[in-house]
Image 1 (cartoon, rainbow, N blue to C red):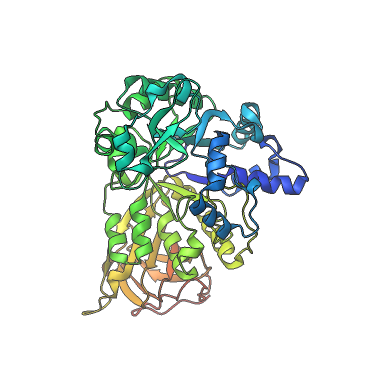
Image 2 (image 1 turned 90 degrees about the vertical axis):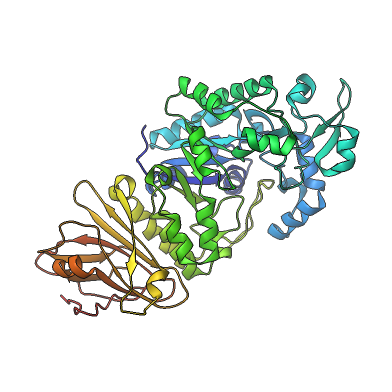
Length: 518
């Protein structure tokens, strides 16, 4: 299977999903019990990838830490007021081995599920955690040299970053996995990338995973970059990712690597060999709510943008419906998902869930579906299924002031899409709390000499415009706060669809042309 240029990915919390299936079946469910109808639904929505979060083996030490850590437990209680210990499965990133947890059905159940996904042209992505293992990983006993060791002085200076680990072979003082800006994760141990044997062992783990899925999302992938590792631990290392990715692709040429990455290291990870890198910068700018920085973000070259994973939420971020008002949420989604790159959606996003589910939990709270938001996402996903949005040519459009002294054109973010068969799409978003006016210069060479029908794909409104006017002055838009247009441009037939005001935004009353009714 080959991906389109701009594929879509759906992240699913596997434990939560199986808890819901278990309730429906009245018994404990495994991956083998995922109904075909659920897979059909994901495929019908137009996804290319399914990322199953937290399928790997975890251990009793991690579960016990998750259940007894007071800070974590307060978070879990906020999510599940009726919390029980059984709801706390331990972090899916405190891994004791890259075999599927027996409670999920084991490796065979995953293999069968992967086969069913492939029947629907869905590719499977799983987790890879390069930086650390669980505190009770077998390597602690068999290969303690794979870990970063500490001294009593280290423990005194940074007590949250080191732990005495009891072993039959003798207790060891080892470092917790961490990044350089925060204390260590207490249910993990830090792998030592300064030891070539550690790197070889982790490549072997990756090769095993590559036989079980079609791609990996690499947790905190930048932490094992040589400069980051040295800054954190004071040790020099050899580069890991180019060698690891190269070894995997010698066996599986089209295996996909996606990096969770921060600190403006997205381009670095792409140069290391990753197919995609998280676009946290766009997300942060959308949360800030300023159109200028959002628009400037899209000025980068497509060699960079095409390999970014665009999202509005994931298991680490707060829920989008809790972060944005509904109007801002829709505007941010139009910008995020109608731009180039990998379109990354999260389980519960379409329904407007507001409670973030920790990777330590196996159950989600009951929440009412936001029907208005759900219907918006249905329309948006329908647009994203168009071949134009999956393999067309994208271009940023700059907005010009509608009249001298009008500054609100700076509040717009606008894109154009063109397809090889002549398809055209225009996206315009007023990413501001004020009404905005502007002219958009359309990058279509054949506008002049034709009448053009602008069909609003997310709201049902249609307008006619003269191509000569569009070519000379551009398209005039007038948008209320946080509102948007997604127009398909076509030359009209004998009749036009009457213009109507849509729920998503205001009509575009061209200051130089009247709306054309049927």
